[in-house]
Image (cartoon, rainbow, N blue to C red; front, side, top):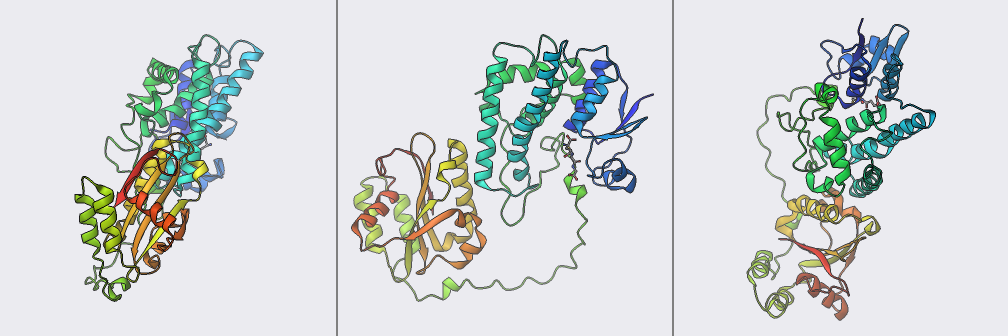
Length: 418
Ligand SMILES: N[C@@H](CCC(=O)N[C@@H](CS)C(=O)NCC(=O)O)C(=O)O
């Protein structure tokens, strides 16, 4: 009789036991009509796993939860297999790589991916740390796989099953080719394993992610779109887990838009759009035309200038993540487009990169609505530019013109908000 596994499909944690069962000739079947967020919240399910998480395996002797434990149990149902290797040291290594797959690979893929799906809070330094830790683990794995086909010995073990299922989530959702190409032995290993008949029978055909899921917007965390292509193949339906929100009552008449208090400031001689046009249209003699023009226009009564310095520069260890972080900040500043101009520099030609910038805001202070609504603001230290200090003025000029070297260093990137 088949053992019943409670989980939906696709689910990478359930795949571990299902693939192990294929190798061991054990019958394990997914429970019928499983509904994520409903079936796993019933009193009967919570009796089996008080966490309310899947997978759970029903056995004649009682339920088991935690996918690695389930896969180990299934493997031991038939002792005529080599999924734990063929010696005590093999067994030790299989367990070693199972822990590695869970704690170094799976955990860091999750820390990178889930905030982007809106399932956890997105914090740029946390994402950078997750990517750096994942790269470290993949680098170590790549070195190991340079001289072996499988993790342990000369055939597939449970460690390969667990690791491949974890990598399947990564390759399918966030680890693009440009990311994985740094780890060619891992790529070769993953595609070899995932195409083994006992794997592909369970997982199906897997395609590598073409892009990194975009950041959730600040106001309304994005949920992954449920299209055939972008639906997380092995993710629970988190939407279904959420309590249903009451339908909004009939739409009210649109309220008149509240006026921005900055519109009530006394008129300024500096017209922001004129400066933005000058900046955009100056193609040559930038210092003489645009930068000089800026200082001619600048009105310290109607505007203020600010230097910003990222508070966690030591964590900017991955170039494209650092640039993405700045790109995300500028997108979120969209709400201030009528009242601000900014330059953001990514400084240095090797990590850690410094992120520093110059911002022009309407009014003598940083507008309150920007502080309130753009969460990136608190990730930076803000210092008002003293325009009577020639050194500060020169620093601001150099930021406007992307001067290189900047304070003795190359620029990795320069972005403008206008
Ligand atoms: N460490 C657990 C993780 C289980 C887990 O997070 N399962 C997810 C689906 S893959 C779940 O049930 N989520 C529902 C929830 O968090 O309430 C395992 O390996 O089984």
